[in-house]
Image 1 (spheres, rainbow, N blue to C red):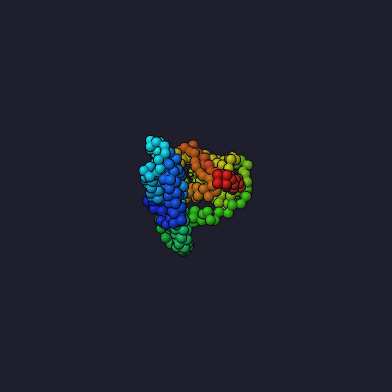
Image 2 (image 1 turned 90 degrees about the vertical axis):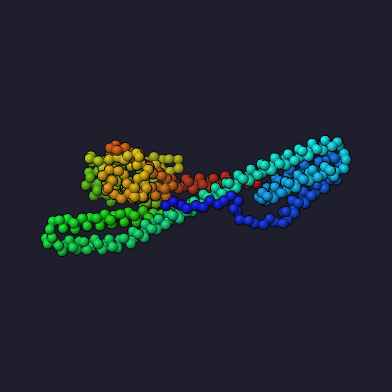
Length: 382
Ligand code: ADP
């Protein structure tokens, strides 16, 4: 679902009134400089103090106030020329006032540019925050929809399966071969439907709020997964080998599903030869990188990104074996673990799926170090 984001128009910030004391303080400073300028003889130039005014006024973040005070300073700079008592020659005063006016407006341009950049930055940050909010809301809605839909479909499916099997038992020997085939077709389709509902439920079950991160042994997780897949492994004559696997920080239930989906796919999408599956891993700076290599039918590189989306399947007759939920679940799990998943493959050459997991201990250490350094920089520049 495309997130709906409204871009706030420029200058749409909520209006607040300026503190009258601050307003009065700026006016008092300008008037004081003007009086000093008028009282001192020509040649002495207190008006140079006007240059500080826009730099101070930037704190108010009100462009029109800054512009107004600039106009006032400019008018007073030149008005004082006619009011000040005689002193140095007139050209000295004119020269000084031209210099003051130039510096005044030059600093105004800088201030204006800085404020434009700051407000553009603030709008971008606001836009990003809104996009994130919309995205997580639509993800939550999608998960809730998948969960509710799957639960509601389960009941009628179970009833259909039960009556189809009762019917099959009661009609044994009483119906012709074609009708028996139709009945078994109904049963197998109900079973298929049931498996998609289970997969959808599994997909919607995994969310950030349900992530339970602990230290877990991947060797033990893999042993459990292989135990669960034993029947499939034996039926296909599959061989699974692996590197010594590490202890990681993650949710053991989710990681088990990740391993299971990848190994089950390696069996499901096997080629003519017996499946040979190899799991390896490498330590990375902030986590671990795993790979699951097989000698199956392989994947067209053009599909390498698409197959990780929900309900997306590969091409060819073998893709009809599934619903396109398994890899989407793997992607969700890898991302919940601060990592990513991708595949390298070519048709007929087997596939290697890679996924990464972030080491939560090192990332939380890194975050606290960063926070400490930011705090130090802030207090040093304050
Ligand atoms: P499904 O439930 O359909 O298997 P997946 O999301 O697990 O869904 O896989 C999506 C598609 O990716 C499959 O339709 C298949 O074409 C391709 N695929 C996944 N794993 C493999 C593999 N190990 N070898 C070849 N193709 C694969």
